[in-house]
Image (cartoon, rainbow, N blue to C red; front, side, top):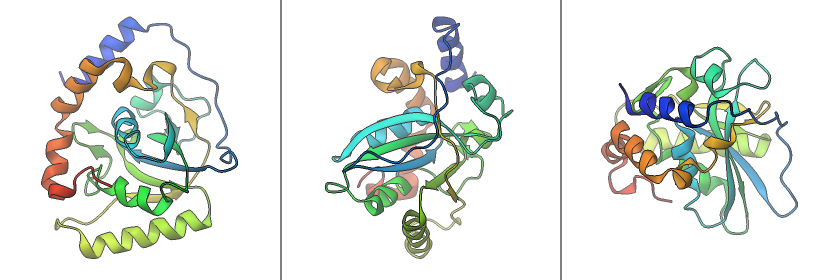
Length: 209
């Protein structure tokens, strides 16, 4: 059994009956802040990676890009809704720019695999930069073009750049999972080989701003 499947079963037992949060339209950021949305496979890992960055104010795990309203984790994981796991990030643009977050995002994922990240396979684990406006689209496209010229690996970059649709926060037990369940999270991340693969792809730049 894969580490993620084992943890999924444990979570289901411990948290059986937990209701999904109400859906929320992707809303503009509060004054003085900005938002970014990234799909990088397991949203537990994306949260953990971005929470390290000075200027990131909050991270919320959720689902985006599907055709079903109010998706549940079980339906998304079973590929019944078309959503990807994603994280909505609120940040202070005076401390960290959107461009820097995009550049950092590349070095926290494997951008060479379609519908898969590390040990998790299927469309819910596709990678993507989900842009909120024309300026973010311009920055994301320029960053991807720059990466294609400078990448330290031979494979093409298949990560998508898409316009944002409705972002649905995931169930409460997924939020800050790495903080609430540090041992289970470490077991999953190590077992999935995420950091080892990032090191292969990015060398000393893996997971660095």
